[in-house]
Image 1: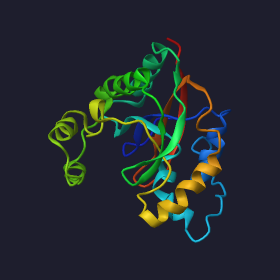
Image 2: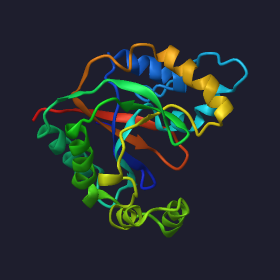
Image 3: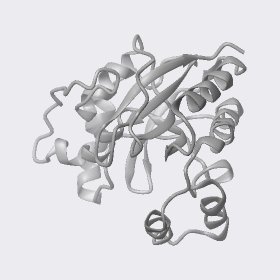
Image 4: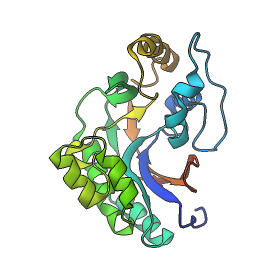
Length: 231
């Protein structure tokens, strides 16, 4: 376990591929950074486009799918760790459907190819289990979120849970790019699909809940702990 983070740090619960999963290596290389080690990785060439710029935002977060969105602590680090570990301990491993590269509102992301109720249940449980540890968002953060023209349901979720895309508004996705133009997507979509190859679609079981930390504003997220699902 790492030491307690600074007050300005944020925590998050994410799904990330296991270290032995080829998707960890390939996806991290595509983004240009390994969230497990923090090491920068040489990215593949993308003729005519700046892949480093295209992947800058997701690179900072690391290869992941959000379960509990990033939050600052209202209570101690130990409390958050204990709650996350307790959730993992009572959650049974489950099969994840094959993943595929898709266009998600202009971003390219890996998404599941079939419904997975256990995955959605885990995301819901993550949001609830650590909510007592979450410091409320600032007024500036709320104002920034509200600029996204939220639906009434999303606005209510933002007010209650500090994030508009949870529960019924949640969608599993492993972000691979920033928002792309049509011309960029015509190049990047086949390129990332080829680069990742068969790795996204291989059979896998969700056996871990990953606790990510960010030391401060603008700092990269790192995997602090991989908590085994043992329910």
